[in-house]
Image (cartoon, rainbow over all chains, first blue to last red; front, side, top):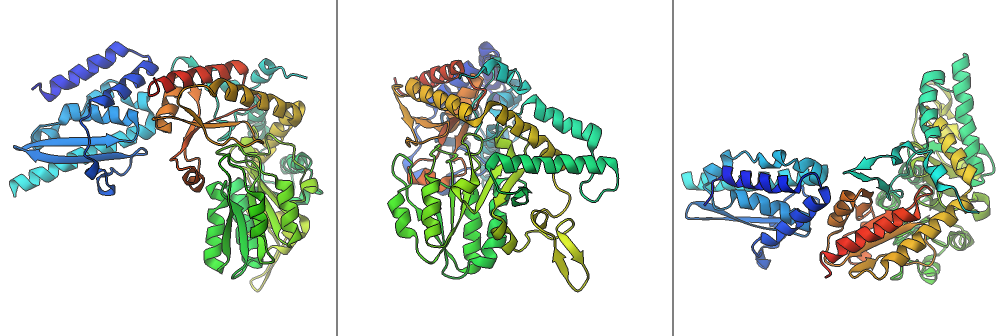
Length: 143
Length: 407
């Protein structure tokens, strides 16, 4: 498995290929959403919705062999693509690793200007929720 | 007579720019229209030459500012065909105008078990103030239902009317769907049972010719920024007898005749409803916006916008996955739609990447969206400076985006 740093580098170079063409970039993000694993229907409930996102985002997490496994879904394709990027970087890592990760790829690819301020706020809420899960698992581990 | 759109576009500095490397196509006019240079110049001109507090100033600048401010009031009177300029009250916008009526007329004349009628097409700003009033007074809110095209069911409205109806508050043209309501018929029927009528003119005043005396509405609320004017300014028209019977809205300077610690007497209309220093600069600049509209004429504007809407509807109707929302026979220039399998926010963001500005979401009409069983729509709304070639780019964009999920 590649390191978090390596995956972030990969993402940055993928977006570099797209260049400044906002249209292709958005299409690319939307297509990334297809990489998400199927979200369990039974988890598509109010309690799993991330607050602070304009579009609906469901996120759940589980700890398997010490690693945090995330599953997420959204009712919009662009948001699905964004979550898939986060999951690609953070999935199946130790809580400690997730908590100390600086997701610098977001700023490096200029995500803010690609997706606009509303979705950027949503993206920040997703990251916060993913880290909160990691924090909770870490606390449980150390208890 | 067809309009010289190039010449009109030349008056709007903001239109001449690129976004995301593409020429800007501004189709978010129902949210706010762009401002002609004359409005921008009037704003800066006021601050550079005339800035002064109006009324009662004993100097030249105050006198000038007062004159310009009152000139706009007169221009608004003419614009909507009011009987006298005292019936024109400046507000922050349509929302404040409606709230003003709810909090003054409503509190005084609407009581327990009285009924207020609105329609299923209303913007939240014409729902919430009445819900608040009903909560306060025990009055009852009734809703005129609509058909699948987004038109009110007039017979249902007639059934709702009764001697208990104190007020009908209805949108003239729907912001979310574009539907133009048959307001003349609504007003006549409401008056027949002794109810007053407030028209929400936020979306109609920039497109349709309005004559409040001919319509005979008791109140009309609208916003300057949707008629090529500045933001933060609106107008509430009220018939003199209605405004005089209403208590003041806010207390403070300007709205008083005499203040003692024992008792305060109030100023005449319109000043009774304009407490505090008003939005002088924007009021003065608003006249330039009205002059702009008058220089073209609403009939010509309407013909142009109707043609754009018809063209957009024609170019999009056969796109696979294109779902129009709101297909009323009478519409202002609003194309509201969804794309099968796609969230409106995604569609909006993809159009933005093509330089096309539209609005997405529930358009502050959540009950209306619920009526259609949808979360929201994508809304393209046209103004006088939009062109057929821009509409073609929109249709091409929609077709390309729709293919993403509708192969």
